[in-house]
Length: 335
Image (cartoon, rainbow, N blue to C red; front, side, top):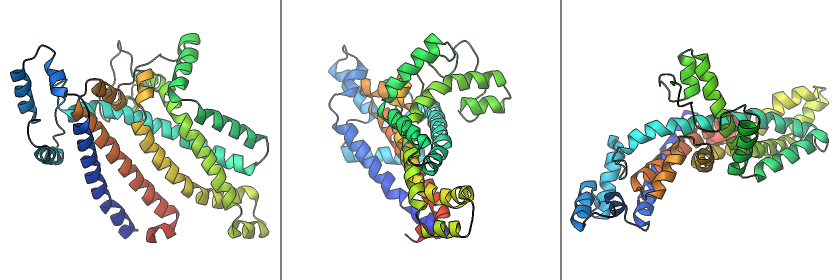
């Protein structure tokens, strides 16, 4: 298992290097002049040239890339042209909000989707299976931003159960920042009121974000379970007189979950990069909203920082999935 883990970790280095090259090249090839935009419409050519020298954008591309990579290693992720703040400081503020949203959304998808897939397979071609198909098709077909708007209309405006947007009420004081996750920070501070407020603000965006992976996990778990139930070891267990429930939950579920793990890892990465619409609809202060503002102002460094951090997290999540897959399926360790 140790050799399997080391091989997977070593594969991360070329992936991250390639990602940095692609992100840097795309940022430099995009049309527009961010320096002129940051300097303002009334800036003179001398002022624009001075700002370009200050930001190091007047040097050759290879020199700029080398400075960027060495800065990344040293913890310097560049400076935002618009805000003039270090990108890493901005990411430390916005990234925990996105991670909290994605983790809760994936938690909902896994907690509901995997049991739903098992039940759907156990009652194949019966009413629980038909209900699961209809709900999964509806969840994966509806756009996230549309679901978000519908939820705001129903739960915030009509029923007034949940807040319309934001991460925490402006008039209230949030709990002391420890992890960056407001719900966890409230629990650490033993502040039940703050936890309830943070949970209410988190409910709608997390649910809107979770429906698509929930539907996919349900269908994937159903297909994997049906396939596993035709294997010889299941037929042998039935012949030995073991109960159907015992076979399903003790033997079949483990093998069916191994195939679903790959989908879970992929969806985690997709959600990290796909929170833009949900964060915009719910005014959620995460990296998606941060990247949207950077795109509008052609601010390259924040865009590169967001892309790199999402890519790094995606590779780490897939590493965890690979290791978990190796634990569940020992044959994968020799692949």
